[in-house]
Length: 268
Image 1 (tube, one colour):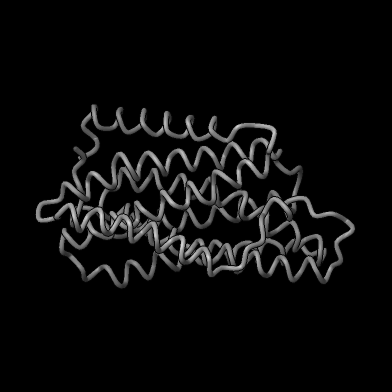
Image 2: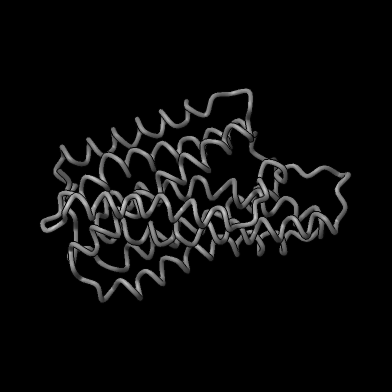
């Protein structure tokens, strides 16, 4: 069983991980305005890989760790997991939907005005999706640094295609690389904002049961994000290949890394 790190984990490290995960959006933005765009196959694989990491960490590590916390009842633990699932789907239904696949390689036939409007909606939608991801990254890293690295990696991997998806249409509409990078960066900043707010609000909540309950809800959010967003989007971006390959690779790599860390005694 993993050991949840509480006060021993410096608060600066989770914030740095959240910053790096959100900053990966700029990598995608730069790919969208400089050089050659990554292939759809690679983008789809990276989304599946990120989903695999999130699923394994959420179901095999975060949820069991939350349920194993002293004083945590199964009803509260599983209840918070379901709250995370339902909360994600409720938020997802309220957000404007513009699929990145439609915008990664914008058609020249699109009018500049329509591209700007669509890019704005996409930036808003991705920003609102990224906010809870920032909270998830911070909460996970502040309770268990080992798992925090895994979540930060998964979030960073799927932020790259998101940054590319925003920067592409903005660059096509305005012809400005600077504006494209700034717009894409805004969606990543929402993730960083989520982490900072989590630090400000949760910094005074030192109860292990409270942190375990939040981590159970975060596990629910990560599972819903993987199943409802990342895996279908991977299939949409590259319909000729099975996204399960990326998912299985992500699970295998993350499982192997966690095994090596735990057997070497570095997990706590």
